[in-house]
Length: 321
Image (cartoon, rainbow, N blue to C red; front, side, top):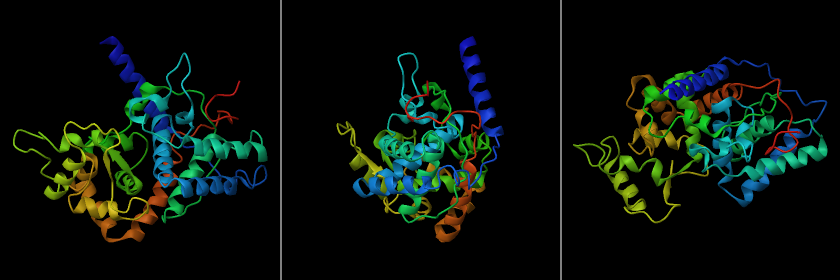
């Protein structure tokens, strides 16, 4: 019990520290030291996306998972060591992929401007680029983040889960200094997402004593998901896209929630809560409004827990000697 209390207090202190960080970043940070930085990253991301259409969703999710744990410090990119299990090996992060894209960008950045562009800034820029390449909004990425030296798998347990209800989501986001509107807006990143069956299966069978499946789910959609996720399920890659236009950044995600076709409980719950329902419905009606708000919220997310006193890693997977 004492350990549990200590662990809980530790997590709360980490989250408090993240939410209180308000670093001063600058859009022109590399203007003199590495003016070609953003173009180098864009070319790498574009090439990777051409060969693998899953890259945009993976990079966007990676950025979110990085910022939500220790702030936007590239701690999610660090590999585990013999003495430390890193974030990328924490339970919510074992499905993260496309780290090679950031590795490739960093290799090229080191050749052009050695020890100048942080891995944290590289990931923030790449996250913007994958949205643009998928047809989404553009925004100015503020830069000047430094890379952290600490990455702990157990801290990933603070990430919001697909099973969260809206109150839990609001609390999780507010601890990072993000509003309810930011929550609904950033959830729109699921427009590029895919989920394995394990993240939504509890909604499909034995949901409650009264209902076999979640009654807030469109019945035909529930049956479709059951077909894709049979019991027993021997296909570890089985799952479903989080909207019907998975390679295009648009507002289809919100339209599907309004139609009872949100894949995650956390997605669908936003239509059932008066604090979020109106925002979901507004974004379902007006894609341009969603785009504008998404750009604003991504800039806010990019400023969560920024580390100004860290280092610029030469290799994003390991701390500098």
